[in-house]
Length: 72
Image 1 (cartoon, one colour):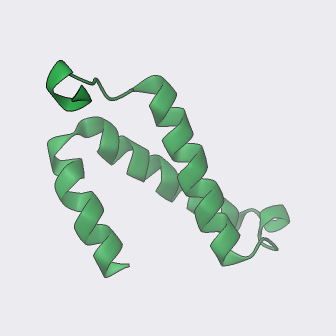
Image 2 (cartoon, helix red, strand yellow):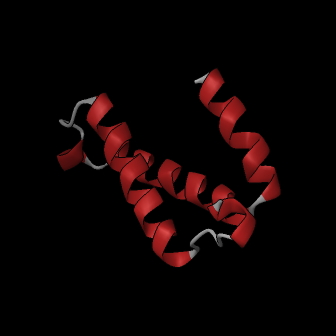
């Protein structure tokens, strides 16, 4: 968890949408923890589902703008 936080936190400080995406993934993870019907899903799958759902949602809401320099 520490290495993951070391990757996410500096980027989240720079970009608000990254911080919101991480926050949304945390909220989803809490839902999986506290909703009785979802408690039976193994932890590894919960992480995958939360990360994929949050990143897909924020890819639609706040896509990363690509400049010409980054294309080359």
